[in-house]
Amino acid sequence: MTTRDKLIEGALAAIREHGIAGVSARTIAAAAGVNQALVFYHFGSVDDLLTAACRSATAARVGVYRARFAEVTSLRELLDLGRALHERERAEGNVAVLAQLLAGAQSDPRLAEPTAAALGLWTVEIEAVLHRLLDGSPVAAVADPGGLARAISAAFVGLELFDGVDPAGARSAFDALERLAVLVEVVDDLGPLARRAVRARLGNLPRPPRT
Image 1 (spheres, rainbow, N blue to C red):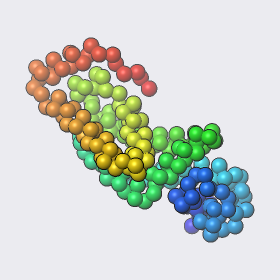
Image 2 (cartoon, rainbow, N blue to C red; image 1 turned 60 degrees about the vertical axis):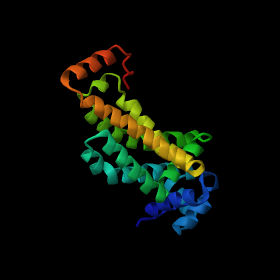
Image 3 (spheres, one colour; image 1 turned 90 degrees about the vertical axis):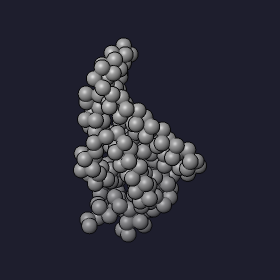
Image 4 (cartoon, rainbow, N blue to C red; image 1 turned 30 degrees about the vertical axis):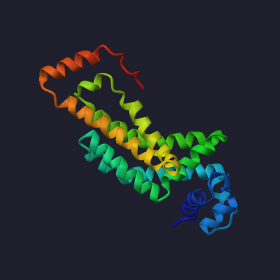
């Protein structure tokens, strides 16, 4: 592992252990097992190191699940994958890292762009699945895959915080999404006449904005 890699891993470990408020060149270097001067030698600043860590870590995690996203054939399968993904990433501390970076971005604009880009990597994968699953469905007329994908990405982080104070509420949020997925499946399983009627009724509703 190169020194840069050690520093990136050290930054992620420092966030998990100390939270964003406790991250510094000293805590990162201690977690990485290197001299803290190397933070500035390789990255210039702690914020630049955090940016690199956020991007590389998220890209790696998304890569782990890309093939599984491609295998999803229904909204319920997507939600099942979401549950499994959330549990695994939560257990490994990766959701907490994103949550801490989001918290830090509220007061440090330099963290806002890389954190948004990290969430965007998840959004791109989820949106592609939603477009594929909703193609040809009567609900496609009013569905907004881009907006739904962003909502799911936001929930991916938000449920980590919700879980800490209201685990039952976090579970009910997933359950509500699952019931919505069942409703879409029911509509898709209707006969041709009923599907046309649903499509006509939904066609009168305002279409979602293009993103």
